[in-house]
Image (cartoon, rainbow, N blue to C red; front, side, top):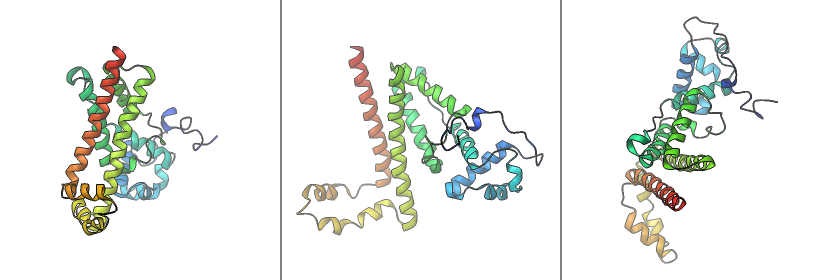
Length: 244
């Protein structure tokens, strides 16, 4: 059985750390931090053991004394960035604000590290930082009154909203970077094209005329908060019915 068919059994977290040989001042922490920096700058395609070794001024072979390869390195990188997540305390701010903070923290995390979006859920996130995040999230949703699988479902719902928002925002940032224009400028270039459909698509074109001058960057933020609030409204209403 290979890592591809059983990623948990072969996870870096399921066995003792590798012996630390090679350059004395090199550490696994240094290697992982450099990997995160490379991933942030160039994405998944930009990470290789050879590129990473060159970044930290080491021989590629010496890295294998600390990590088995790229898959293991990605597990370690995911757990390192998970250490950035700070979920509010439900006892202090209430479960609803704490749950909102959970989703906001993940959105911010993935915007800082967009490479993580495509590997979360595929690369095992079972390191110490990820487990602490899970523990805190469970405490928040438990405080709301959720139990058992309801906690897992509600957590997935919040994460799906955060990930969906980030995917749209990342695509927007890619387009604007390539075009050298703001998203508002790009959208407004479509005015004449949209107007050409005014008779065929009156609802769409009418909405466009009323809304295409909005600040699209601010609209993205407001849209995320709108969706998050509606999710929490739904959970709150459902919990009220269940308690009744």
